[in-house]
Amino acid sequence: MGMRWLLALGIGVMATLGLAEVPTRGPILVHSLEDLLGVASGLGTATSPFVLEGFRVDANGEPCGILIANVRAPLILRNLEVYGAAVAAIWLQNVENVVVENVVVRGSLAGIFVSGGRNLTLREIRADNCGDGIRLLFSEGITLEKIRVSKAEVGIWFQGIRSSVLTQSVIEQCGLGLLFELESAGNVVAENAFIQNHEHAQSCGRNQFDDGQRGNFWEGFAAGDANDDGILDQAYRVGPDVDRFPLAFPPEE
Image 1 (cartoon, rainbow, N blue to C red):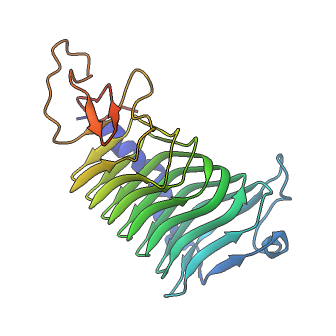
Image 2 (image 1 turned 180 degrees about the vertical axis):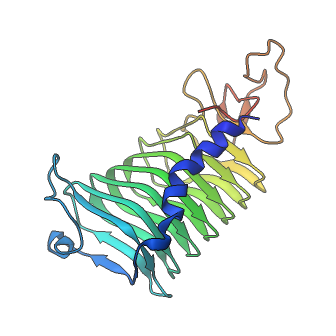
Image 3 (image 1 turned 90 degrees about the horizontal axis):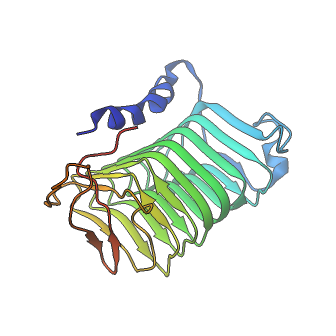
């Protein structure tokens, strides 16, 4: 069942889960580049991006654990654990050129909330027990890879999202695994596993659920694989869209 690939998603997460020796602090609110001074390393350039890393944030019921707003300089958030937020563990608002990697978000209304973002990368993210695992609003050019969302009402929620990619990820035990709405279009979803969700996915149309050769694993979808090539012989429909090459097993790394 491709368990090596499923377990591999946890490798980066294990480093973050090993944050027992790092400090725990309260929320970080960044409204401008000046607010990064003193809390982030780096210069905010392509060769020396700002970096926030290596600590745990307890939002303690405040709206956000980490808020990054109105920042367009290169910024990396990595090796973090953020929890207990009333709105979003991590909220990226009107930002560009941000990378979020090797991060655990949990116990918040939204794990990661992006509103008005461009050219963003979210990778090696673990989102547990959030209302929405990852919610993206009116943004474009977002790459999501090696994401694992568990036990959310909506695993990953695209609202008005264009030209973005979701790949090498697992969405499991959610009410609705993946939702495209508000004219989200031109997005690609491929090489992912949808497991034990009440409903795997909904789409508003004009999105692509395969990369032209391989699609996704949809647990519970019964279709044959006559030639044993790992691609099921029947397409999987997601509303008006279709996965033309659904996988017989979760993809290997």
